[in-house]
Image (cartoon, rainbow, N blue to C red):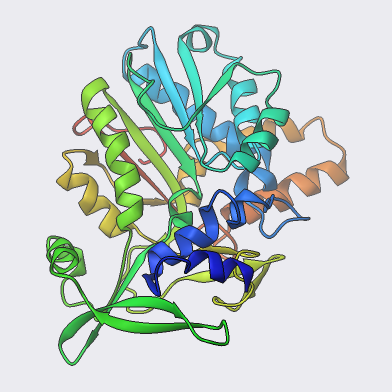
Length: 354
């Protein structure tokens, strides 16, 4: 009740994306401002927590990309939404195996939550990393942005067609402090925006990441100016979905979307075809979208597991391959998660995608 009063203090209703932006990111009462959602004691588990091999493969990919740019003397590495910082920790440790790269790299963390920053700083206190509130300070050398489950956590607009007209979903608060979703005719500006995308044509229901695209535009501007690219790993889809994909997670289980407001995580599936078209409009190149399983296998995760398992006990080896199965199998994360890389370079065969 208290959080709803604060969200609707100045307005009686809000578009779905702005409502959940407040729910998740408000500095005083947002979900990410007061919760550590990661791990078995939190609300969800991400790939880096399942196995350190995931983070190792990302590190190897970053080094490989640096090599493809002819080993620039200064190379900026920016993690988007770094969670509890443990993925960055493994990546930094892996970087140490490549001395020439290690001297070139500058590592930054892009995090909105002051609460999570404190956790990250504790876990990374022995590492040379810097935190960003904006990306302006990066002004020299190519830059690679990468994020695991970053884009899905940025709220989306929701539009639906009714009687051949397009409406936007809004949220309002009732007199009994319950939320209610209702439709409002789409604004001309928003209607014009979605009409620009071929992949959205003839859809009866659209989720549009307007806030997410605003975030990416800042990064794309930096890439176009200084060279580099953007790697995103997220759960999403490439086939058309004509329904809401918003979901709420509490203690590793699905929760009712408009219940437990401010106390559960809210995400949506990423439309990778829309993302690809967006990058194309911004003059970046995308080879193709691949599954997490495809990407990790191409990066050599199975070979790496085989090498390190030789010195393991049967119990530890079983645990290693159990975790690997969660990352790679179609029943778990392997096909649900997808990987996309957009860069300034045209027709470059990047490791992990072929």
